[in-house]
Image 1 (cartoon, rainbow, N blue to C red):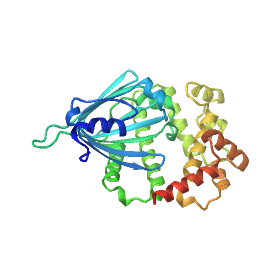
Image 2: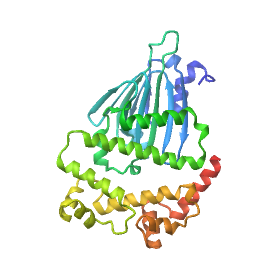
Image 3: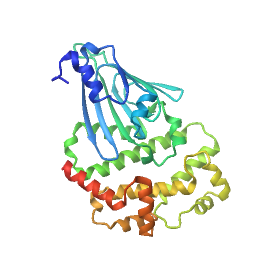
Image 4: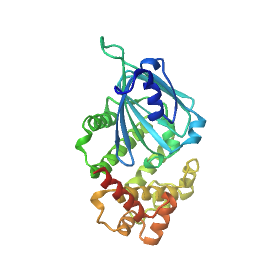
Length: 320
């Protein structure tokens, strides 16, 4: 924002970058910021360095635009916090946290003022991705909203390292790389959340649900995957399995179909599979009937599989 006069920077940032939130800052007259943004298709990654600020996602802002996204934030320097769903998390360097842009929240970012002679700035990264991109139920994920997630060890450290390298050298990655990178990032986020859910105190109901969802994810390509097969593999009755999903947004059969469609959507956007017929991709993920695959895909995403692939090919060509 060096090209913007100091007195106009905060308004510029609010209008161009932060339209979806109510923004405030104690440094309005001397606000400064820079942002690097990388569009990977299903995933958007950005790095921001900026003065201290607060942001509120209000019901009015949600009504104006709700794209059904999660945001995973990584703090690199400075401090931050998030209040959402009656929970509050305070974070420092290398911490991760998850928020849901479809729900109200209050976040704050405090600049690092420890370096003498340097402008105090907050430095962090954000990953935005659709709710449906995670192989975890909304009910499971919401347990980790506004919860500190470790970014210095285990899966969190792997994810943080990848994000840092990505924003440090974004020009090294081509448009075809984007689909694969988005998969890797989503897989690491899902693994981090599943690990945190599995290591936290929980009841047998939640533990079984996570095992079932993991089993489904690992067996989506099997044509005989069904609620009955899942129940048998976990030594429970079909009725017990159905009750397990009663508190979720999808039944067990709907969950299997949803995850299969998400795998199809990912393959259709993958440039390395551009020569694979659409019906072959559908059959690979449990849709042996091309007409049934087309109907299910259009019902879920509003376009046919072929149209979705064409749209992605056009966007990849534009990026190149």
